[in-house]
Length: 166
Image (spheres, rainbow, N blue to C red):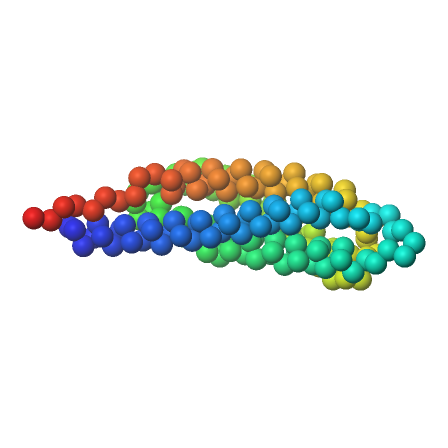
């Protein structure tokens, strides 16, 4: 019994570390997104503007956004669903509902990345970038709330307790 509780605790701790690293990546994403909103020359090119910093920031953001989305789908969500099954904390209807809503925000993130990941695309569409960033911020805000709901409904319960052995 103690070994199964110990294994369960180790699994919970591994998932906790995975979720925390992913939430740290989310924080980096938010900081970069806010930084992008304040970039000079974001929409209207000025004479002698150097567009390099702007498109580099957007490229960094696109890369981090894709890393974050991928980690969510291919690591974090899968581990949370497995944890729910393992510890009998499943709520299939809620999980399915959240995952469907996450799919639509994923589509918006992929579209943003597709439109702005390359320097030439970014520079050519510079005039619409502020509006697209604003729209993406709203979408990501909803996404983060859904992800938090998923985490709280499954993982943020008490970790398995180790039994004292005599």
